[in-house]
Length: 307
Ligand SMILES: C[S@@+](CC[C@H](N)C(=O)[O-])C[C@H]1O[C@@H](n2cnc3c(N)ncnc32)[C@H](O)[C@@H]1O
Image (cartoon, rainbow, N blue to C red):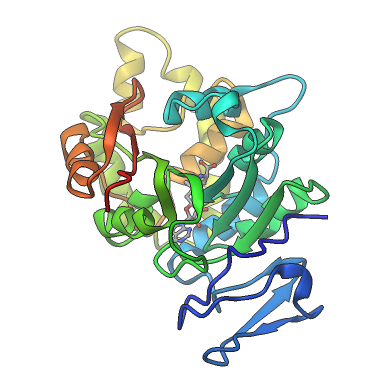
C-alpha cells in the first residue's frame, strides 16, 4: 500500500485539513471546508483539473516512461540526484520528502530506494507514468498537483527538492518562494534550475519559437535527428560548428538523446538563472547553510528554525 499521507494533506483551495488517502472514496473525496472535489483517476489523486501549460511533459514522460529510470545497467539518475541535491542516503532514510515536478518518477525512485518516504507531485499527466513506475512501493505516493497550489499543510516536509522544474513555470522565482512554507523549520530545500548555456543557445532559442507550437508527435519524430546528428558533431573543428547550428542532446544513449532534445525544444516556458540569483532567493527567505553545488545551477539550503 502507498503512503496514506495522514496529517499531511490540506485543501489547495481553502487550506482545510484533508483526510488520509485511505479514507477517500474509490473515486475521490470532497473537501469538508469548501466543497472542492478531488477525484482519483487511474490510481492517482488529482488536485488539478488539467495539465494546462505542461502538456508537452504529459506527452514526453508517457512516451519515455522508462528511458531515464535506473535499472541494473545504469544508476545515472541516482548519480544525478546526488550531484544536484548534495543529499546522501543516510540523510534521506526515514524522512518525509517532497519531489516537486516528479516527471515519470526517476528521482522519487532513488529516494524510495534510499529509504525515504516520498511524495511526488506533477502538474502534467507524467503522474500516470510515475504511478505506473512506482506502484506497489509502500514509501511512495504520486499526486497530480500544481506547485503553486500545493495540497499540503505548511511545515510538513523534512526535505523538499525540485530538479529541472522551476524554470519551466511562468515565474521561476515565485515558484521557488512558493515551496518554502512546506519545508519544516530545520528541513532542507534543494533546487536545480537551468544556468546560462553559451553561444549555441542563440540558435536553439530561435528554433524554439517554432518548435513549442508544433504538434508534439511531429516534433518528437524530428527529434530523432539527434541520433545520427550527435556523431556528426564529434569531429574536431567541424563538429562544434554542426552542433552550434543545430544543438541536440549529446547523451551516449540514443533514446535519452531523443528525450533530452524534445525536452529542450518543446516546453512552453524555459528560463535561465545564475548562482548569485538563486543564492539571493535562499538568503532572502532566511535559509542557512546554503550550498552551491558543482552542477550549475544547483543550490540547497536549510530553512531557519527562527521564524
Ligand atoms: C523537465 S521535467 C523534470 C522532471 C523530473 N524532475 C526529472 O528531472 O526527471 C519538468 C517537470 O516539471 C513539471 N512542472 C512544470 N510546472 C509545474 C507546476 N506548476 N507544478 C508541478 N509540476 C510542474 C512538468 O510537468 C514536468 O514534468
